[in-house]
Length: 416
Image 1 (tube, rainbow, N blue to C red):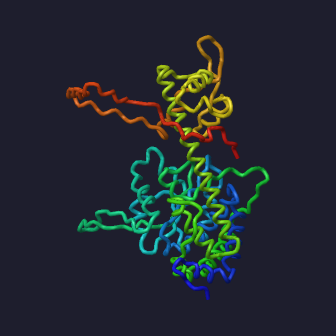
Image 2 (cartoon, one colour):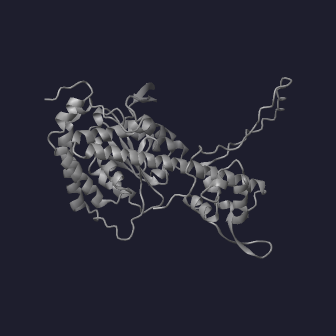
Image 3 (spheres, helix red, strand yellow):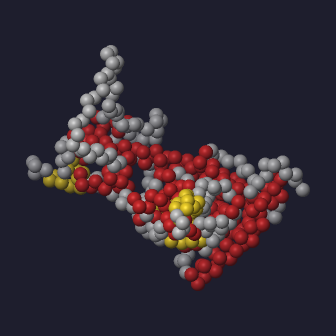
């Protein structure tokens, strides 16, 4: 028997001897891929390990979220949740829910939360759901209870929050949730990509059989799994999120430890690029709003004039975008995710030109770069500004908007 040195090495070597886990995860991965087209082989590996990790949830220190997002409907997000519902540990499926319900469902034996249409919960007008967002953020780590006044005596009560959760929706979820999630960026199937139709009469028994085998395999290993300390290829919160998946892969042995770490690296690096692109797109929205304001909030701006104003800003990245600076194609591609597109407009000289209408941007501005509301007038005279000491240089009241770090990939990325 391999001795245990306290790091879990002995447990890992002993548990990998059967090979049952390797074959079971291979079969689970193949079955998930049969019913859903995932965006990459690494994503399919990640979903497989996330499902398996739910079966050792009672001993985990972190409960990774699974964010199943796509740009439009029809990308297979709900189908992924259907498959998860039949394979994870103690599933709880909901389309819309309240914090009060989740507070009471999560206890010493929490379910695996499966939330469809999450974009309707975290939309710009869903302010009353901020408690749910806070719960999902806190529940990523064990021993982060939510305190509420409850019961007939109105006593402070601690509600557990720790539970694994998969959330599916159109568009990105809030940053605080995405940062704690394994992210699946779903796309519509291409011609020729085939899946097996999901029919309950045969799909559910097949998936439930895999779920039961996962339970039989992993439940006896929970105590040993709690002592494993897998070596991670990433750090900080990414390591917290991916550790349960890598841990299960180490228990399975075979090719799974290497596959799990490769998937971890590939998917976290992809999200880093997505974060950079998101920051760049938000910067673009802010710059376009400023240009419209400089033009007196005109209703329409020619594409040519808008591009010229963007590129002329020496503090902005647009002059160096791509190889020759931002052009009409780049601008259209960057704005496409916001459902903003140029159209033909007739101007005062009777000529038509491609242009952007200001009202197309209003929704995106409100969602992604809302302006801070000015303070309400109080009717009292404004205090005199504080006098500056003689000879002290003035402090600038405003500055240029932040630019992404040097070396950022400003060029357009190929679409899939």
